Image 1 (tube, helix red, strand yellow):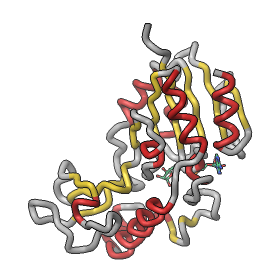
Image 2 (cartoon, rainbow, N blue to C red):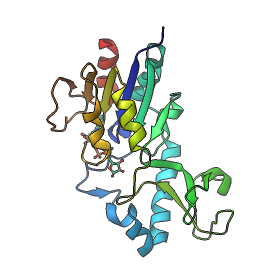
Image 3 (cartoon, rainbow, N blue to C red):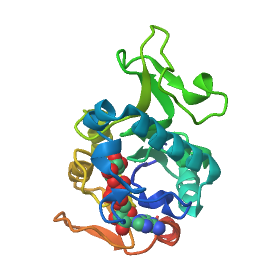
Image 4 (cartoon, rainbow, N blue to C red):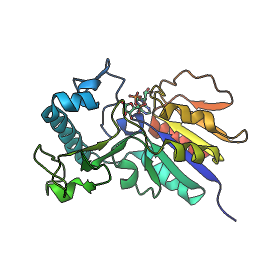
Length: 231
Ligand code: APR
């Protein structure tokens, strides 16, 4: 018999205990920058060096941290469930905890792509052996500038349709560490089937109108332990 399907929708809060800052816990600034300066096509056009440097620092930081118990518990849930993680995070902590099925809605920190040909995508380690630094002048095989492989504000989220189909098929949905303020990702919670068992884990549970959720008002590590115990 096949295992029941568990979908995790994770956000910045799941990586907080690993030491990666969330977006909205710091007065609308992200590591001292306005989000639109470093995470929008307009910001990139205005000052690409600033954007490159910003993501270089994010990659460098991500290499210094390790997965925390919440990431590990999600990996452990694979024993009982067919687990799919739909993450808004661009770090690779789910993968480093061993999770085998991760969909990155908003892109991936350790991939870079051609500004002109978005299908030309490379691991950063192929571009720079230090594994974190992308510079202006680093080019794709067709000679165009490389940029972070990140979905910026105002850009399409290519995987959103597939993600909503997956949520619809979930027997269990676990939402963890997201403020549910950014669409279309936040809208995914509305796609569940009537019989789906739904958990939300967050030290500050966001307001939303859908009913029948099990709310665990705790940080990800202890909250995910409780989810695991209830499944
Ligand atoms: N454990 C669990 N949740 C936590 C923890 C923790 N230790 N610490 C903070 N949180 C919660 C906060 O209470 C908040 O609800 O994590 C959430 C973080 O919310 P945001 O900073 O808005 O992050 P997220 O929802 O992932 O943002 C979505 O916005 O900037 C864009 O593209 C970016 O993917 C990102 C998207």
